[in-house]
Image (tube, rainbow, N blue to C red; front, side, top):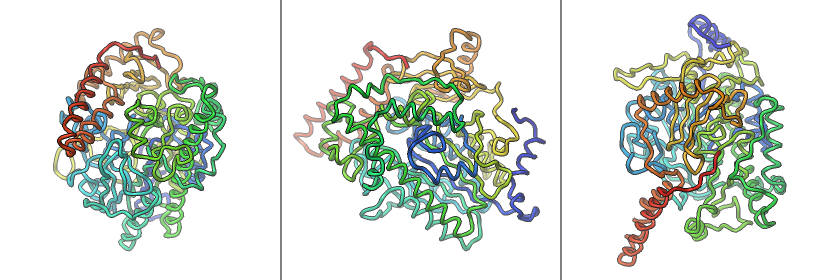
Length: 603
């Protein structure tokens, strides 16, 4: 059932309104809102979605709320974050691409500012305008200048990381990409403790913000943005030890276990195909040392996830202690699918550089001073039973676990699953509606802004409707040349190399979420019509074609060389001058090579 019309919508909202909680109808108490955003978690990493990683606190939210099993985001972090903050498609919000993956030819073009532009307003700005306290802690990645940091975009207080990731134990960047970290607090450089753990620090800071403003009596928005489990994957020794030996059977076994568990938990249809990605490799063909290394990296990944869940539990316990838990709406989601990239598998230069900058020995994996990554094999298990990873437009890159809970609201059936299509642009509008705030639709504080495009998901929370998106309305998406057109149960998708061959394919992602059966030949009319829909989306949103031979991994490497390595070499004059010339030649050679015909594996 698809909900239509204002009457049924108002009925659903009445069930979910603060008045339902027993507050006076004349002046209902607005709910608090807590957004818990994980980084690079695959669809089945959460226990409630089929994972073996211990996530009891997230699972408890699922038991109190609704799991959305067909929820979609962008293929990488900042475009998702832009849409989550604004309810506007990433191209109109300024994140048509990320700073790390954008080709120089696109930088600064409309929609490609690589930061949240001034044509959009955030959920924080809209909630603050009606009296909310607004706080953010953790990863921002939507701008690093004073006018693009959280406190310039509606947040009262914010501890924010402007980059894609950082070390989890000390104030140190990912040295393969950045020269220094960009942590700020309230718009100024932050002073972090000498030693810390990122998930603990992020929750500590949020608890402090909430308590600081508690006496005001105003409701709050808490945007909690973890850097778990982004590279570098790191966890405390005890958390890593808890998974010792758990992954010795390899990723194929784990992928099959996850598939069965996801079906049993009701978040995947019975009989969903078990697809295998050709990037994951054959576990049995690895040497004993290689298996030990990969299993150890996955143990660190699982430990990092459990540590994040523990901090979520600590935040929830605090909200219970101060009497705020029942009237708080919780949202848990990941910003994209699992990360398959491994610096130790990206070519001789990157591997050499990682070994120079970090301790990459097997016993050190996941510990301070290491640069550990999950890798493609176990990432294929994290997204099981889906296909594709972070950066791709396949379901494994875009479909993520999402949970909404409002513990004190009896209208929500705890433990239920909403299987209808939903999208990250729906989230800000839904939260505003649940808070009793009229969402902006093209104007805010007297100025014209990009209107929100989302649909209210609240009827799916109550079970009034199984879906709220019209089967006839298309929704487009593009990032780094990987593109999608959603329409009803169907998805038109193409992935550029190295993730695909650049050809369009058609899938029914309701019955075939693993994208195993290409329908482009059997449904030619639908295939053609959806390509026209995508072309209209691309034109309306000024989507730029990618330069010939573009690949996201190559662009990350080239951008890092240009912005990080070359300045370092120039500082070594005159020896550095020769190295700069060599580096420029390497960039030129890589660009020339990527324009040459190469064999491409079909996804």
